[in-house]
Image (cartoon, rainbow, N blue to C red; front, side, top):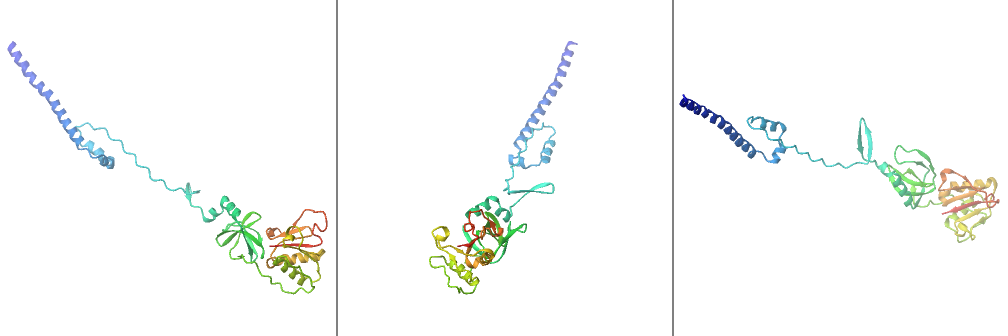
Length: 303
């Protein structure tokens, strides 16, 4: 009985060895498969390009092998930044960037101020011109530039208009009607009262005298050269006249200012100038006497 019991005991141990060996075989097989999977992994570039569906399928096709940790997906490189444009506008429910229009660039306050500060050329208007706030269609008319007015220009042009400077502000007029040539006097008539302005005065003073003498022969006194200011430079003349006749003379000269090269006029404590022609005649401060306030003569200053 004891011998048979020993044999039975030995018989039972054989299956146990088989049971132990089986897991070892499975483990060895799994290791070999895992090694094969590891050695067979695609290059990193291929992994990055593979779809998540393909990667999942590869793992599912080897159920006897523990799935290796998945590699983190690479973060796509950011797209190159596009150049920003300067104006932001709302379109429907989102914002859009757009380019500045030529008028917007030209009318930028800094650009306008620079143009005004650098302006150093004056031209004559050959026709009556409307003054506009802008070069484009959205402009408003803010006055007129009369024919013969000499005006400061910036040299900037846009949409068929030229930029001029009126009282320190940017204004625009229709292109093609500003000239750098002084208009020639075409008043006609001959001075018949024997008066003259003598030598040493500007050609424009000579023209003013000739025109006024021909139109108003009853005026016989003209004051030109003296030691002070514009008279001393030969650029001014005093036409000795008063009352309503004085206004007739003043308006006659103003209307022919381009041909006569007139810069400004003073009469009866009023002043009119080419630079501020849109304001018409303007009042002046009281200087204390009839002559100082120009009630007894028309003062003319020329270029």
